[in-house]
Amino acid sequence: MNTYASRLHAKIREKGNPVCVGLDPRLNQLPTAILPVGFEPSNATWDVSAKLYEEFCCRIVDVVAPLVPVVKPQAAFFEELGPPGTLALAEVIRYARAAGLIVICDAKRGDIGSTAEAYARAYLAGEHVDSAVWGADALTVNPYLGTDTLQPFVDIATERGAGLYVLVRTSNPGAGTFQDRMTDGVRLFEHVAGAVEALSVQTSEGETYGSIGAVVGATYPEELRQLRDIMPHVPLLVPGYGSQGGSAADVAGAFDAEGLGAVVNSSRGIIFAANQEPYRSQYGPEDWEQAVKAATQAMIEDLAKHTSTSSLRA
Image 1 (cartoon, rainbow, N blue to C red):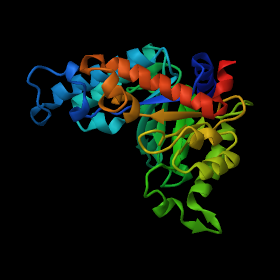
Image 2: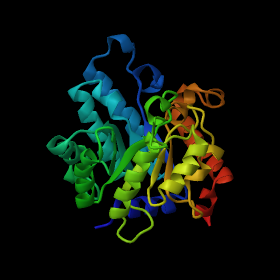
Image 3: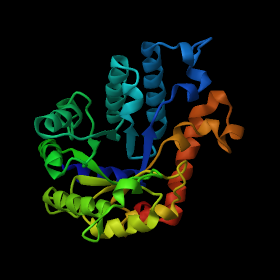
């Protein structure tokens, strides 16, 4: 069985970049070109909304699959629509995997014992998409309840060749309220980082990186570099690039000399590029997919210019 880390890095090398496109559909921002005539978001049923989310995300997959290695659907936007939304999420994940993409489901699950195991079995398909209902390669998880809550996720991930991304240092403005709390002279997020490093080493199978990753935001670049030192064997998922204010230079510390070890996520800046300048002026409503493509290519070039990911093109 191929490990998650080995599959991830093979795909990053294949595409020559570490870009992760976040699939965060929002009803009031969908391109008008895909909406039914007379459509009003305030009157939309859950079924109609779910079908629109599925079409929108699958069309984005069609655009980005030749360009990037990873997509990250955000489960919350689908779950908001109830059962039709969760079915749409499963379809989007399978569609993306059929297109050859690595899929990280961003659901931030976390619980104890058999409940954690049930979450893991539901989401973590790993190498074989039909091993789980939702069929993701990897899942984001919350460590707040302690390391014993992570172990069931680690066990299922190891069994199925899947990956995890543990919340370590998030990109939101209020992250420090809890994550910066000091214990024995060490901040809470550094304690979590040490635990994640130990778990990842257990799954590395002699490779540089294990399959237990960490979420570390681009909005704290100095801490990102420090956390890379604490977690040398941990693949990183780096949110916060673009719309949240993180730059390519800010994420440079996430990568090793070969341009591996991390994926950088952008959601709104890519999937809703047609709603923003300069793409809004360059592309009309009918050409929203071209705007998605252009924004994706711009991010790839930006990272290559300011990080070691340029070496992936050698």
